[in-house]
Length: 495
Ligand SMILES: Cc1ncc(COP(=O)(O)O)c(C=O)c1O
Image 1 (cartoon, rainbow, N blue to C red):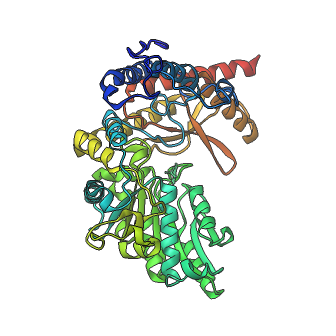
Image 2 (image 1 turned 30 degrees about the horizontal axis):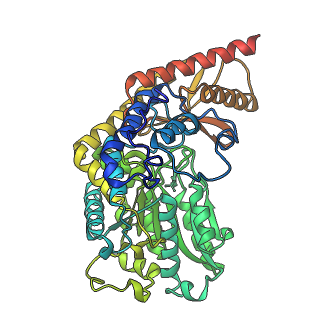
Image 3 (image 1 turned 120 degrees about the vertical axis):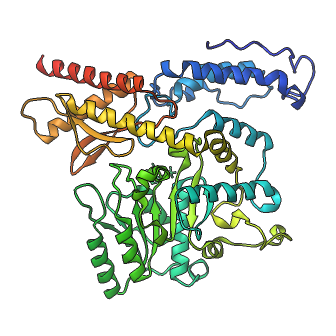
């Protein structure tokens, strides 16, 4: 339906109006945008999941100079279709199984639309009391649904990366008696995480001035889980050598292979040595809403901070990261700066979330969580999570029965790890190459998008089934695609 947008009735320029849409024209103009979104949803499954564009192909279609005269919305929407859409990778496509999802929902979209209409900058309570109080309430709902202890207080961050940075900065201040903000960071602080932990920890340690050389990567077991006894030994030997253990980051659901670190044991070690424990459950945390998967965060109530992303698997479109902290006072003490122009009468009685993170300006993100949680209900959220988990179990079982595929670890949540393994004698290098070829062919074909990781040098394909509207027929289509692509590769090899 590209190019199907009727020109608006008014020609603003010839009518000598302001070259922009007057707000009173919203009702007559919005239909085009809704029609575009409707048509996008209708076309979504037929669009290539991964953009097929080559580098530079989008920018060369965009004029080098900014538009001088205002243009009509139908022209802008036509170019959205013609230039932008082919350059998009479709994260809401049911064939999107790469990385971790960033799923959304109709409810979340509605809320985003309204958030933009309200256009509020919710830096402090005074600049929109409802935004601050709704944020507090929805995060209390989630805290209780996750069975986190009441001492946890929540704040929405833009991403898990920011939340982890906030955690590490707070840990740094606590450990240095709040001197690092004033005097600079001592060079002997240490942070610990496993080799499988997300790169956002490396980034945060660098930004926090702790120095990446002071980030200690701990070995993992054969399932990618941090080895607590190695952590313990390392902390002890660091103390003996004059280092100050500052923070441990435990991962609940690593990006490569969804490893779940043994949180309760790690918490004991942190308690013993008075080290801040931050828990990164960016993707998998949502699963702890299911009583049968609450075990993945067993020990969480001993942690100092915890992050998970509703924007990954809780039907709330990017960005929305829920960050919880055991002692909000130390968080605020780390980030608070109070210039005269931000002093308010309500201070001290309310949450001024600008003091709970890095940016001053804040989007009204709580609204979309509220829309999703109210419209789905916790029942609806749990039902859909279980559907994804069931679909993944089915996917993994089917794949296991395929001759040319090897499932590399038991299905966990909605995540599978596997590789293509044709019959015959092949060494790891050859198998790695086959798997790269398989993945390239699938991703180039546009019907599905998968990503990979490496485990001890072995190329492994990851598949996450987390699209809000994914159904069994999509999983069947993926299985068929894998089988057909493998058959093609087999035939090519024989020729
Ligand atoms: C385990 C883990 N932690 C942190 C992140 C970073 O998340 P964000 O994009 O919200 O910064 C990711 C991203 O996929 C992740 O998988």
